[in-house]
Image 1 (cartoon, rainbow, N blue to C red):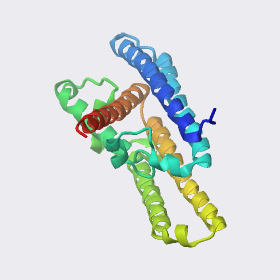
Image 2 (image 1 turned 135 degrees about the horizontal axis):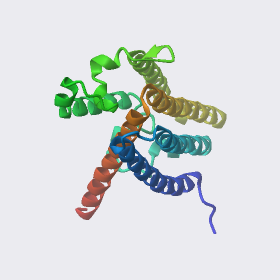
Image 3 (image 1 turned 135 degrees about the vertical axis):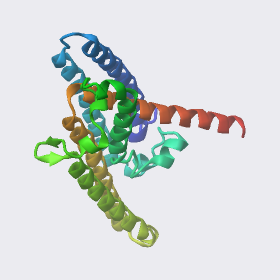
Image 4 (image 1 turned 90 degrees about the vertical axis):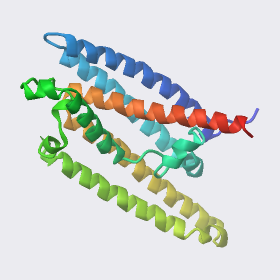
Length: 244
């Protein structure tokens, strides 16, 4: 019986992880609705539900880190993703700055849908209370949201440049020795580690900027975006296969 590869193992983990994510998100939605509809709310339960989702994110990060150490080329190929998902990947996965666009978009949509209540002075505590202009002035741990976004963009660009330099030297993969090849593969793994670390730090940083109710809305929206793209991509792959 052949030994399971690191990529095959991670594909199984990915499938199980997505199921766990859906379970925790359903719980988060339930707690969020109870908090929103309750006269007093239950912020502690909401915080606990958010933390469960965040721990799942950290678990994913640890599993991918270990897989990257064993097969970084396989990780970059991302065989567990659809063709559409891979077309959107940045260094083997989603782009960190996407999260800021998601927050701004969700905030604007909710702001517009509840503009009458907001003009009357009602505050729900959700993302509708954070318009883009307000968001720039919200301080958390001595930083503004715009500062966090700028820092993320700067790191993202630096990693992109580092990967570009690695790709520019692709001829060395053919011309070099085995030891040179091993060294270059290790360098690629380091780049992917930096990218994954930035992804996790960005999720954590954005969550820390928000109130518990806003955290729940953000995590649910991020998961729905991921699930939506995955679903569209899988459907497209099936249609493409049936037409071959």
